Amino acid sequence: MLIAIDIGNSKIKVGLFEDYLKDNIKIISFDSDLKNINNISKSINEYISELNKDIKIIGCIISSVVPDLNDEIIIQMKNELDIEPIIVDPNLVPEINFDYEPLSDLGADRIADCIAVNYLYPNNKFKIVVDFGTATVFEVISKKGDFIGGSIFPGLEVASKALSDNASLLKNIDLKNLSSTNKIIGNSTDESLKSSLFWGYISLTEGIIKRIIDELEVQKEDVFVVGTGGFANLIDNHTSIFDNIEPNLTLKGLRLIFKINYER
Image (cartoon, rainbow, N blue to C red; front, side):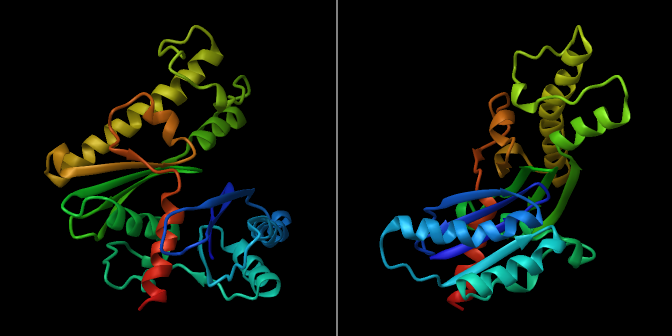
């Protein structure tokens, strides 16, 4: 079994691959805070027990954008599961060029996403990944498979909270209630906020992708667009801009990075 851990600003997603050569995955999710670290190894052991078969853990690979949590998770993996985790950085995939300065600022999740789309989708096209997490991140990958940059925006939850925290008359919006029934022209403060978040982020997604394509000086047919992250399906339901939605893109990229290095 391979353990892949994606540590985000809001969530820690643990992907358990019974066979590291296959994409079949069991997901366990936690809030990103120290009190949940102990629950990770406990939940993994519980899942292995449920399988009722002899399972050997061959490795653990971690993508993290929250450095403060790294040491504790590494300690847990060593002490409870007797494995030394691999922490993702660009050196694990030297065959790919990451055009980013400084390279140390490039999120490990973006590295994993780049690997995933290179292996999972057409290799004769540019790829654009839109990751809807705490931040809404656009990632651009060349036809050769190199990471050539992107854009970073506040995520839906961050934007909603910023409005409510900084404007005394505005309330925080329950994002679960966003849908196409929200009018663009709101007739109340609540409706206006929902309109800005729902239709605004759809327009943001479509507009930035169009501008990326224009800047690349190619046609839409030359680009494969993938959505991932917690709000990808919500956005995808009301736009035709995506070619595919892959909720577990980062975890699948982690599996591929591990496979590349394990077999090297």
